[in-house]
Length: 297
Ligand SMILES: O=C(O)CCC(=O)C(=O)O
Ligand SMILES: [Fe+2]
Image (cartoon, rainbow, N blue to C red):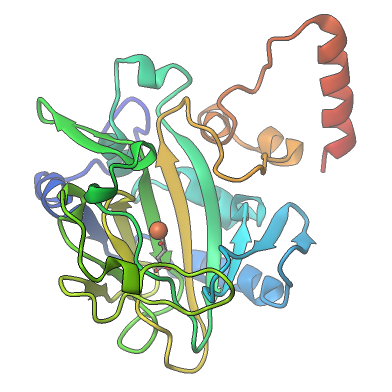
């Protein structure tokens, strides 16, 4: 238990050990049946959106390959998606892995969400392999110093339906956040643009993570990961919320709506908009409030 999220479960000693060792842990049964039902009802309603369309403040998007439909800014999608911002099943584990307590990284609070989306993936769709320690990417950097974590991007990936063989499960290369050398199959298995399907199947060292609806994988984005191809009929449904330190910035040029900001409590609000009050000369502030008022709701 921490002062930041007193109702949330801290990582166990075993989770700390395994997150550091492998770069990921699995939290079984993170969501309740009622939460699953509510979230799936929203996805039922939004699954027909075409890339570029909006439903309120949720945006239909893809990364450019054959990865399925991303519903970006899904924390705007209703109460259950809002709850996911700081869900007690995982938020204090994430906070521990991002680290930075008592330092400059907490300037605006414990965490910032730089991207959140649901992904609906159908037969013939997947995501290719990406990331890994060998890339040296600062945005996702993983470091442990004096037994304290500093992981700059920690993802919570939740299964909204059961994900088993043939369903297009997430694949990870355990411990690859510590890789120093390129994987010889990386080029062949990595993400492709132009609506092409690429997947992580067959990459030596990669394992499929099978989940039941409501389970979560918490992983450092520094780990090499992707997914298997969806071969079964129907959809694979997941969501991903990415957390980092409070001075981060959104990956995409989305911003939380005024309506969302006004509904959230102070802690959750800081996690979607760490700098709610902008310092500016009076004439600019007047303009900003007028813009905010016109985009409210
Ligand atoms: O779709 C998946 O299973 C993997 C998602 C992913 O690459 C990510 O969340 O960073
Ligand atoms: Fe990823």
